[in-house]
Image (cartoon, rainbow, N blue to C red):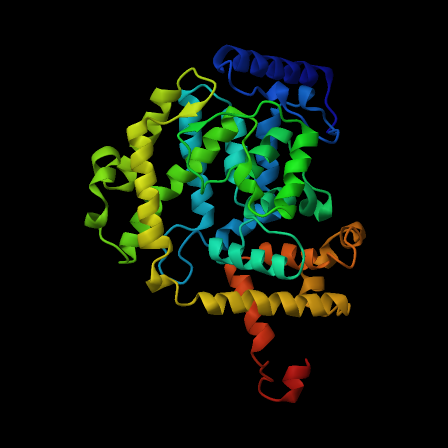
Length: 404
C-alpha cells in the first residue's frame, strides 16, 4: 500500500504511543514488543509496523491452515456424540482467556500471551493424546526419531505453513509454543532468559531426536510460563465437567483435599488457581503456587488420570485407533515411495508445497512427510481416509456411473 506523508506521520505517532504504553504499563519482568526477535527480515520491519510484533504473530497464526483445522480436533473425548464437550478449538480459547487474565494482573505482555496460547496445540493429531502416542510409536518403529505435539506445533508454524516457507514468527512465540508442556505441573515457573535462536533450534531438534525431551524445556519469557500453567488450568476442571456430562464420574467423587481448596466445579477451580498464582507471583520474576494450592492441584491431576484419562470404559477402542494410524502410515508410505500421484498424500498434501519440502528429506527419513500429513489431519478427515483405505468402493447404479 502506498501511503502519503500525512499517513506516515499518523502511523509513526501510533507506533510511538504503543511503545510509550508498554514502557508505562508493563512490568519490568514482561517481554516488550521491541524485544521481539525474528529469524528472517520482514518486508515491513516490526519497528515501523503499526501492528506490534506479537500482535502481528497472532494475526498470522489465526489465518494459518493449521489453525483452521482446530475446529475438528479432539481435546480428550473422541468417541462421544455430544456437542457440549470440549474440542481443541475451544481449549485454546480458554487457555488464551485464562492466560491473559493472569498476564493482565501481573502486567505482562498480553499480545505475546495470546499468540502462544492460540498456537500451542496446532501440532495435536487426530484422537488427541492417544493419537499422539500412536504416532510416536510409529516414529520409533520406523527409525524416525520421536513425535511430540508441541514440537510439531512449531514445525507447522516454522516449516510447513505458507507452502513450506513458514510464517516467520518471533522467537518468543515459537519458544513459548515449544515449551508449553501442560502435562507437567510445577510449584514454581521461572523463565530461562539465556535463550537465543541457537539454543532454541537445538531444543527444537532434540524434541525429535530424544525421547520425552520436551519435558525438560523451560520457556524463555514469563509470558510463556503463564501460558504453560494456564494450559493446565484450562483443561483440569473442564475435563472434570465433561466427564460428569458423559456420566463417567460424579461430582461427589472429587476428593475433599481438592474441594476444600479449589472447590467442586470448573468455575471455582479456575478462580482459585488464578487468584493463588496472582497473589504469589505479583511483581516477581517467576510464577508460583502456594503449597496448599499446589498440593490440591496435584491431587486433582492424579484424580483425573485415574478416573478419566485412564478410565477403562473409554479405553476399549484404543487398539482399533492404533490400527488406524498404522494402516494409514503404511498406505501413504507405500504410495509416496511409488510416486502414486493419485494418492491423497500427493493431491491433498505434497502437491501444495514447493518442491524443496520433499527434497529436504532423504530416503531414510521420508516417513516424516507421512507423519506431518497425518498429524495435520482433523478427526473426520482421518476417519474418512481410513474408510477409503480399507472399505471397498461402491460402483454406484452401474459401471458407467463409476467411470464418470
